[in-house]
Amino acid sequence: MALVTKMSDIERETIKIGKQQINHFSHRHPLEAAEVHDGDDKLGACAGCEHEIVGPAYVCTKGTCSFVLHDLCSDLPRHHRHRCHPGHPLSLLPSPPYSDCEFTCDACGESGHGFTYHCATCKFDLHVECAALPETVKRSDHHHDFVLMTNLDGGDLVCCGCDDDRVAKGGWMYCCLDCKLGLHLACAETC
Image (cartoon, rainbow, N blue to C red; front, side, top):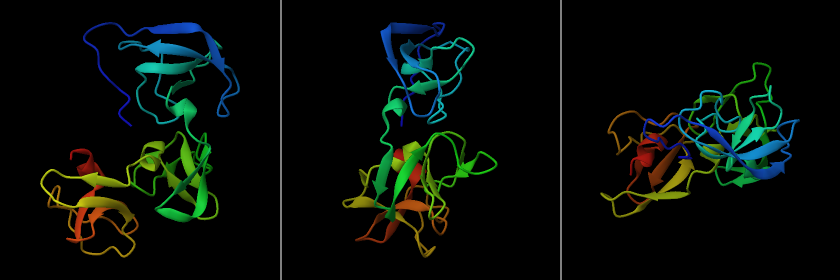
């Protein structure tokens, strides 16, 4: 989710847009629409995706509260069916359901503290960005599409993007099913 854009040395400021307010399931106070520009160190990261806030956002109306969401993160579906976890629907949680308040994303293997798409039955978690990965990607140097899939067997597909690490068992990758080529999620972003 490439939501962050940098502006030249202009101090970031939050500009409130009208009186548009929303109530979001993840926060107890109303949120107000705002446009956030580069340089505002008063705002932290988005409570949903945990990335820097620049652009359209919703900020908490309570002055002592620093809760903020990207506009896109405020509008995520509460339930999601994903082809890489077909057995159960995933529910959007405002924070990880674990005692340490952290989850490990089953797609990319990275930890998270913000929103998670979660399956309580399987203890399966996804970052909101990973839940939104495209089902297929195309590389300019290859004639077939690469399909998003789970590396269930930990097989010996080497990433054709970096010619290096194998994809961990259970991790997600893109695969050319015709040529039996793998592609790390991070390598697919550079296609």
